[in-house]
Length: 394
Image (cartoon, rainbow, N blue to C red; front, side, top):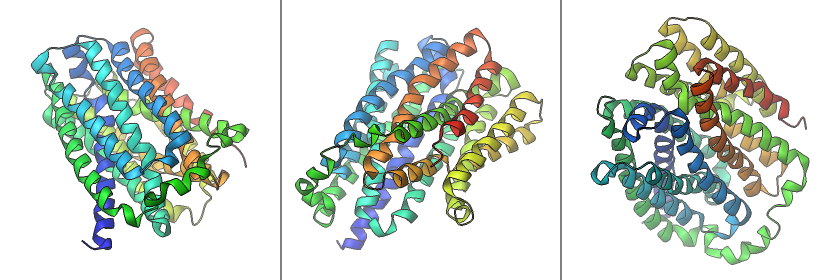
C-alpha cells in the first residue's frame, strides 16, 4: 500500500476516533433521565459519574502531559479506544448482569482513562505525522469532534426509551463496539506506517522531554489553565445538564430537549470551519474574549426570557457558533506562548477539560437538587466572563 493511502487511512482513523470519543462523552447529558431511573439515583449521584470519569482523566493527563513524548502516539490512541470501548461495552451489557451504581462508577473511571488518552495524543499525532498541514488538519480533527458531539443527542434519543430505563445501556454498547473495531483498525495502520513517522526514532526524542513540567514554572501557564477550566465548566454543564434543564424548566419533551445540545454543537461545528477566515481579520486572543462575553450575554437571554422554542434554539445555536473556536483557539494560544513545548502546552487545555469534568457535573447536580435548575445554569454562565478575566494579556 502506498504512503499516500496509509496517511489517508491514518487520518480517517483519527477522524473516526474523535467522533466516537465525542459521542461517548456527549451522550451522557441526554441519557441522564434513563440512567438515573435505571440506577435509581438522583442528580447529584448522576453528576458523580462524570466526576469519577474525570479522576481517571486527571491521572492520565498528568502522566501523558509529562511523558507523552516518549510514546508511540498512534498506538496510544488505539489503546485509548480499546479501553473506552471495553468499558462502554461492559456498561452496555449491564442489564444482563444486574444494575450496580459502584460498577457504573468503576467502568466510567476506565472509560475516562480511555477517552482522555485519545484527546491528549490526537493533536500530537497530527503535528508529528502531518507537520506541513497541521494548521489545516487540526481544525478539521476538532470539527469531527463537533460532528460527534452534535450527533450524540440525536443518537441517544433514537435508541433510548425513557419509559424503559434499561435502554440507557444501548448507546454505551453501540459506541463501545465501534471503538473496539476502530482500535483494531488504527492499531494495524499505526504498525504499518511507523517507519514513515517520527515514532520510528522514539529514543532520539527522549531528551526533548527531559524537563516536561518546565512550562508550569511560569504564571501564565496557570492562567491559561484557569481560563480553560472556567470555560469548560460552562461547556461541560451544557452537555451534561441542558437537556434536563429543558425538560424541567422549559417543559420540553425528551426528544426536543435532547436537540438542545445538538443545536449547540451544530453552531460550534460551523465555527470550526469558519475560524481560519475569522483569524485573518482578528487575533485569536481577541476573538476568544469577544466570543465568550457575547455568548454569555445571549445565554442569559435564553435562561431569563420565556422564549418560544424556535427563538430559544436559535439563541443556543448562536452561542454554540460563538464558542466553536474556543478550545482550538486556546490550544493555539498555549502553543504560541510556549513554542518549544507544544506537547506540554497542549496538555494545559486537557488539564482544564479534566478538572471541569470533575467539578462541574456534581456541583451543578447538587445545585439543581438544592437551589434549583435556573440557579445552577446561571452560575455556570458566570464562568464565561471569569474565563475572559483569567486569560493572560500577553
